[in-house]
Image (cartoon, rainbow, N blue to C red; front, side, top):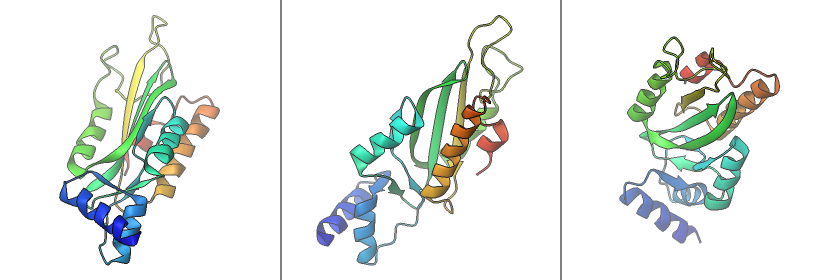
Length: 170
């Protein structure tokens, strides 16, 4: 079984793949191959829970990113309610560039950034929000889960997600 896991990890790395399943990464470590990247869920769903459930079902849980990648979250809302969540390993520079898009003006309201907590515009129409987050190499899956729990708590408090500062920090 260890040989299979090591082979799977080696093949994934040889194909320049974005992630290595956690079980394969553990097998690779037992043979002295270290995958130093962060840990992340590889999923998408209509909620954080649906996304993480999909990762458990498809990947067996979180995956280990390669050392040149970091864990990324993209959250899309409309009217303050989550519509889509994506989590995956991304190239460091691409992830950081995506996070800068949080600061772009919202197309419907140029005085608001793309990542915001508003539900409606001045006409009462529901407005979209797209927030992106990168987690540095030093952040493990428990830190990612803590961030997700923070989003849930903010929603519970009626805040429509986290403030922009929380999305911008690594």
